[in-house]
Amino acid sequence: MMELSTKGRYATRIMLNLACRDKTKPSRKQEVASAEGISVDYVAQLLMKLKAGGLVRSHRGVSGGFTLACDPNKTTVADILEAVEGPLSIAPCIGRSCGRASICVTQAVWKKANLALKAALASITLADMVRQTGELRTASFDI
Image 1: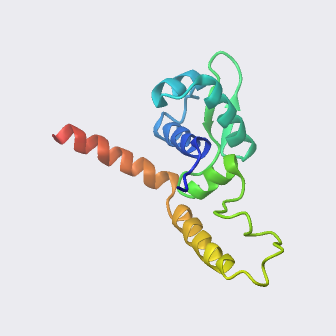
Image 2: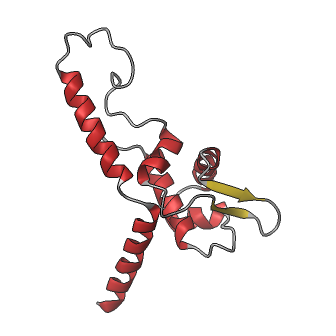
């Protein structure tokens, strides 16, 4: 089974959490961890990767925490995953030389699948997910 790591899934949830909060007030890692059901230490590790990737910024002091450093309308799920996971690749032979490349028919299949995956993840923005979150909350109140 091919599966996205917790690093990528949790980083996406953290970014969505920050995008849904009051943009004028930094969010503390403890608040994010509690809201998402992720350990504070893991949230801190992921926030540092997201900060290094230019997606979040940290604020020091008593009222410090983390805020988005990116435009939710332009930031995609692919951007988030690449910030914490590195380049997206479904097979190790994509993007680097392989001794079997001249005789390997399957490499073309993996490349095609990888392009489709990247396109799908790049088509969903953080703003799209914020809108979907609002729609889900509205729908749950209508029940």
